[in-house]
Length: 297
Image (tube, rainbow, N blue to C red; front, side, top):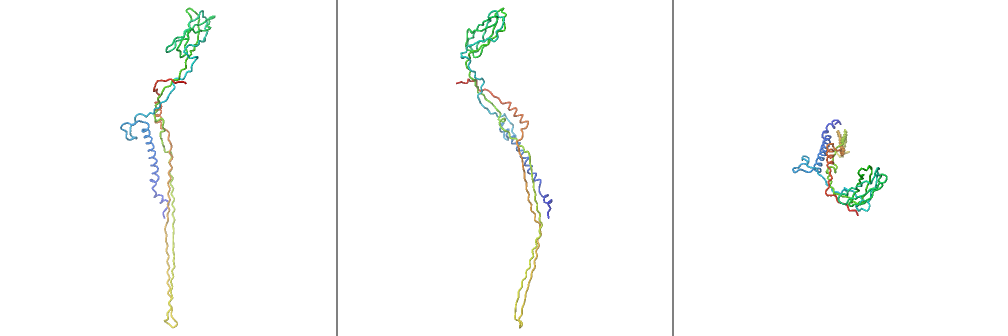
């Protein structure tokens, strides 16, 4: 009769349990090579002699270009009637010690036009007001005002600001082109086998049996004759006995093997994270044309 120990010792555990483990190791290796191939195939330009993605050298990173409009100067609403002249000059500091009216100088408009002029009024040593004598033209921004005391005049401290009637300035729109490395836009596959579980179950049923068969056979016959006056009789009887015994062992074997593998998306390696950081720093936005005014209706 076979024993369970003998039955289990006859199982090739090296092949049965080692096979799944070898398959897991190969799967992890193939996953790593798939990552390498993905990075080289998708993220970098191929060189002229590339054949094997796993062994070929890499070229330049592949960039994706996007064009979009960008506002480089905001819309500026009109001030006053928008005729480009100086509309008002306001005294912000009257100063003191002025004996006579100081000189008022208004800055010139940029990009052409005529310069505005003005005169100051003094009372009790202080500037009481500034009158615009010539409004000028072509002002697109508020001019600056400088107050200068006359020669040998002790007056000081006077200050003023001017406001120009500026026309509305449309927003300035410029076409930009953004170049982004494609590797920074795609999820890179990093598959890692997190755990492997192998469950092996063996069920062995061994049964000894003995089977005995017995059979008895009896045959009989009677013959009657007339050899004597009163007759004659002959009786024939035959009997047979048979016994058969069978012994043996019945063994039932049931095996089951369950392999459970858990795979996860692994964290990005430090080297690849650094590479993507460098590529992100290489993202640039460059103008493709000169700024154009945006028409406001």
